Amino acid sequence: MSKKSSSIAKQGSWRVKRYYIYILFTIIALVLPWITVDGNHFFLLSFDKLKLHLAFIQFDMQELYLMPFLLMFMFLGIFGMTVVGGRVFCGWICPQTIFRVVYRDLIETKILGLRKRIKNKQQEPDMSKPENKVKKVIAILLWILLATLASANLLWFFVPPEDFFAYLIDFNNHWTLFGSVLGIAAFLIYDIIFLKEDYCIYVCPYSRIQSVLYDDHTVMALYNMHRGGNIYDDEHNKLYTKQKDIQVQEPHAECTACESCVTVCPTHIDIRQGLQLECINCLECVDACTTVMGKLGKPSLVTWSSDYEIVEQKGKTKYFRGNVLAYIALLIGLMVVLAMMGSTKEHMLLNINKESRLYSVKKMPNDKVRVENAYEFLLQNTQNEKMKFYFDVIAPKGMEGKITIAKPRKEFTAVPGIKKKKIVVLRTEEMLVNNDRKDTIIPITIRAYAIGHEDKIVVFRKSTFVFPRSDIVNAKE
Image (cartoon, rainbow, N blue to C red; front, side, top):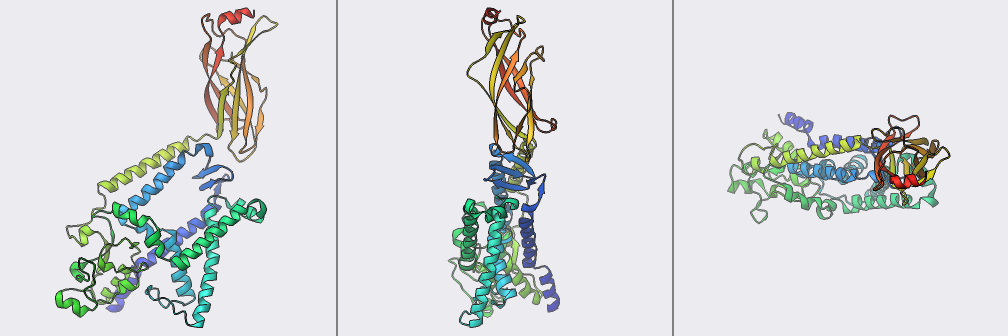
């Protein structure tokens, strides 16, 4: 009976499930920067090349209006996750927690045997033993290697791997990158080896924010005092340390006072004391109590549930409540906005500025009058290859083909990432408007495109063509 219960508890271990999640996120983080589609990354914020890659689409820095929506999506996602599952982000996704598990549970415990058991996180290794000192040095050296890899991995989302290693070799011109790798690695070494879970307790601001987001239906690790008994009073003073003492006051109390839920806790709290900001919802205490109570043929006293269901015992937890639905609606709305903005991305940038002189008027040998307007076009090729560009003029109905491009006369080349300035002159030799009172502003559209890619790499810009008063035109005749 006890073996069967233990086996069931092990198979349903939250810790093992967390390990699978950690492995999945680690693989994604390491592999994703290397995946490109047409030279574009899934996410890359390049300050070096002033580019943003998002979902394998490249955006210029002038298109960084997407970033606020991306940040809002990220923060609302974490806040919504907190409303539903407490600090589940901390226990299941946060890199700090993953790194601590790798160092403490994998390196120190499984590989080196410096710690005796994963289930006892309160007992520090005995560093008076010479062999433990050697193991500690080896553990630190192994983590230095992993911290350097983690540092490089983080920077790959800002400097892509194809440039990262070349920049490191060229130290004299990229010492900032080299210093960033060392600086981030040094922080991770201090954080994981020396600061430990104190980062979660004292440094991370998320633990202070979470208390505002919780409600009665927020799911978290909770001790069922109705079954287990009150181990602490209202002032958080510990009342009992042995099971027999508990049962004197509460005969039906099931807590065995084994304190397995305490020894296994990475943030060194006693879950039986009630809700605490230090709890990261890793659910190690749930596993510990499940194992102990399973041997007695009873369900765990510590469960992943809500105050509404466990403490207040008012009914089942409501997952789809008003505030949760509001977060879902906001996240869906942001996804739609991001998708719409991303789908309307222009594959080249073009700014048109009209020169201060409105127009020039010249009489031609054929007795026609030539009117010219000059513009400054500022074009940027946002692709990854050199391309040739040119323009078309789209005039209003009835004036089609009467306004032409006088300069430049042929297509020109633009290299990626460099703004190209071109003086463009539009010309007409037709009497477009006969107005003797004022100059006429004619709305036109400029169609700019890449030669050979007219269907994809094309933009349209509104502008104007100024035609002079009829008396100015007639004075040239």
